[in-house]
Image 1 (spheres, rainbow, N blue to C red):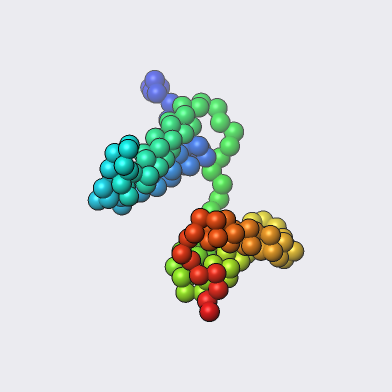
Image 2 (tube, helix red, strand yellow):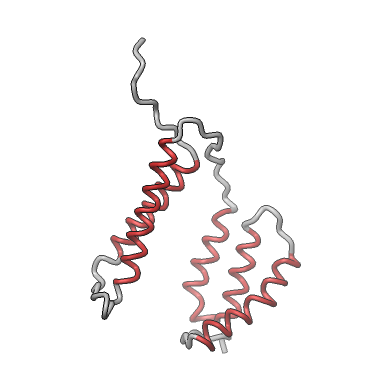
Length: 154
């Protein structure tokens, strides 16, 4: 029996998360490839997404390499939890429906989805988040930053 001088790469949390981040960054880089980059003095519409994609790809690669280099790692990959996708579906719903049903309703449903994706679903948390965060986000994004998003569907 021969022993390899290189130990097998163990699939741990850091490797999985790092590869996921690098994959998302590479996908983002692919999608923003046709946007004009511009310059440092006059950035174009592709400047920020390209920068974020590059940073995300490099960060994910660094996390994956570091996770693969660790010989003794106690954390393992957790089992798949379908409830995690509730928050992702909430974000997708928000992006698709915010122009149709308004910011207040979409933000409320997004907060409800985020709380529902957690381990402990408590309705008072959802109500508290909605009563505090929705008006605050409305003030910041719509009034303060001047985003052209309808607050209500009417």
